[in-house]
Image 1 (cartoon, rainbow, N blue to C red):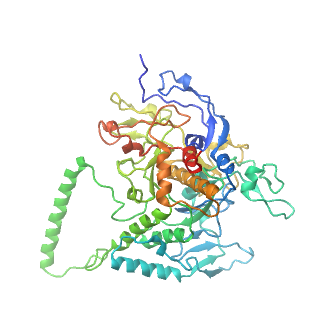
Image 2 (image 1 turned 30 degrees about the horizontal axis):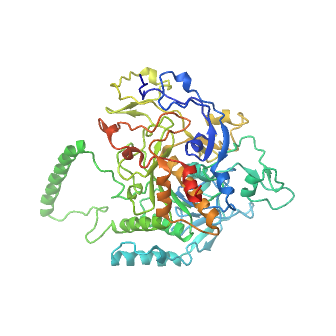
Image 3 (image 1 turned 90 degrees about the vertical axis):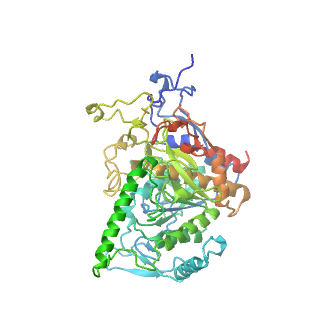
Length: 566
């Protein structure tokens, strides 16, 4: 009799700090696991090694076809640590911009004289000669198109600032630093001695014995790799303010920089489009609230008839259209995505709908909505899913406690203090695998230099200069960042074949990524195939697998092979 799947039985046991690259097919790794796709109850038969045998990579495949030409990835987030040893050579410092502290952009320049404490800044035109005519028809009304043209004209002649003060990215950039590591991080190398010009990082990888550079001797650094360590990042720093113009500027800047990929690993706080739609079972309650609001409105109208009342200062005033600028942003994102793939996180609220702007993903644009799956083959407990999801990538897990599913970390000491009794078939195993990525060094980082990863570092007594260099990371942010790295690989592969600055448009890259994804894949080193789960409704797991996984788990080797035609 064939063994039946057991959703409560964890499969992989050994942890490899770059397991996610193996799961994505970026590296070829042999974990020495059983080939049985259905895990039996004998967990000991599924033990894997934490030191797999690496026999190849997509990077080698691309290098074997043509000259290495970096892709440029724009990361629209809260910033990136400018001097992290695994990232600093991968960041395009001369093209990066901070839109959170200055409307027209700011950039931190080198402090030439540390003894001079006076504030210094100079004007800088970051949007000079901005032109969006190449975007074609954005689908806006004549008035809205004129409004956008005015914004573009304003930015084209604007003056940002070049500041010689402390870079804000050294304090507030933990999320962006972790995403950046998953996209482009490389093993750190120091410049050549004796004033010699160091060889470019690409040369270091292909010529490890090169005298142009020498390995970084810092014992706290890992030989860490992002999905595409040969590409470069344009850091576009944004805030969490409900400021549509800030995000319009971010996408205009990314487009003007002619980047190859845009990664948006967070939501945009559009007051209208970022709101989640209510579930059917909650609509009755909401209708009662609506009736209550209507009664309250009539009561206030009755008071108003008795005499003038003070206006609500934050209320929408007659004749205003607060949604106009947000609508323009929506059309701009879609238009840019048709030229440049825009990789978006699906969201971390466990809802059967996507956050904005991932929710804009459609067959006729280049927006890629990325969900997260665990090494156990399930949707990550927090990952949003549903209509519009493009594909999934590996990440960590989240606990679930509701009447449709129980998923708990049974290794937690708190678990023993509570009684968990799930109905048959409603418990799903929790994955203990997370993504390891680069952290903002110092107290402002995720782990504040106290990360449990000290066992992975050569020197456990010193977790890094001013704090830890690495952190446990995950979410659909991490999954989206990994897909952004694979999209960069696709663009580099295309360039290796066609040379020069050849570039695929957003729709073409999205199609390649979807074709390279499979709903029948296992998330290595796990053994369970992608398996739907019941999150927000009973029997939800019988819905089409695309509802949970989109086109499925992305495979970088397949995507690159499609471009190289191998």
